[in-house]
Image (tube, rainbow, N blue to C red):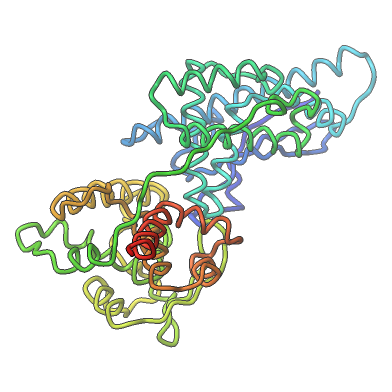
Length: 404
């Protein structure tokens, strides 16, 4: 008789010290395991009930644990059904036969659980920005579905159009809709590659993702100077936020997630060497005096494993949570700074990146060099950053030329 168990593999762990949750199938003394792509700490696992302990002070994490148990229950149900189906044939079967039957039935894998597995995998590999993007998109789709899960076969072209209409009715902007749709499409594409969804039922063949030019998200060099000189003596809570923005700007528009995870060990031979979280490209930034000055206010560089800035908090269960909390806090505070400066652009960490590109272009630096500085694979991507001000540059040139 085949048996099915859910285990926390304490003999293995990821970088955060969490252990993988697996399902073990045993038949005729032969064992096979099914990885769920989820990791937990030992104090989060009930080995007797074979499920996650649904306790957390953080609402989002508690919901995650509840969803995980739902995923486990569905997987167990699918495996047991595979065993029953094989037993009903009356023929002898092996543990590999069970796994093959299970995989066939996995073609009816749920879209929600598949998306959650992708999010978890991105978190485990440190790609927190991508994890946030997929999770946000998946949550929007779940809300559209009233949290009713579905199989890939049930995700039709008609439903894709209905999701788009739902987002429009909820005042979602064109580019935000495009971002959500790209994530949903990417999840489906991954399922096709892994044999868990059928190419012939692909719902995006006729669907066209629409995009529109983004509004200006850069500020001029004078505004950067005004920010640097802004008297914040009465608002000490804004000083470190300004420092994070300026540090990003001085470091060629370094993304906030990369700033958050920089460690003292990233500083070598008067340079900051790091790999970008989003693309894993390697960068090397010269330690200039303004950069040194900002770092010195937050770190004495004595501990190689310490983070340069107080963004990732030890009291949080995961760096992912710290990053999300830190990003929200910094962006909210930056908007306050923007109001103090009288800017007409909502100030966020991303503005520093756009501003670096914009100021570089206006200083006569070729687009190819700006592209390399930002880590873009093509100049076309860089041009998207620059399009927001090109008309103004051309208008100024035209006025100069036609003023005769």
